[in-house]
Picture (cartoon, rainbow, N blue to C red):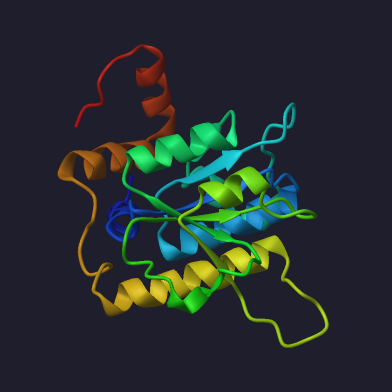
Length: 206
């Protein structure tokens, strides 16, 4: 393991944002899922969440550029369970959803713990999810189409979140605890060894 590799991994981990995430409800097309995870990695999201369509486990393609290796995708059986899990961790959930109460996406404060909910490619977020959300946001459109592709919408919102967080200095130092940082650094640098130790239920040498 080279010092350059170790330094690169440490630098990326120190920018990770544990209180910024996405919740993908029934987003199943591999190119969209992969593109969203690539945007998540680019802005420092620590992990993403998904409620997959029944019988359709998440799949990725080359669009991810390998980001699925660095970004855990946590699966939830139902939308309600996903909300319950995120709420228990202090996240507010804001949905990209057109409604009478929807805010311009730039009006939301993404420096607070936030999960951005994005719905399926054709029908958007479910009525259940829309009701469970803390707020709805929209990306203003000035053309003939009413919405962006889900992966493009995710990128637009996530980079606004990054902009706000940069202004507040949230990328200036590590937001992970020392134990979290050490654990993830070992898993990223030594993935095979980490997998073997997990299978044996043995601790990491950190």
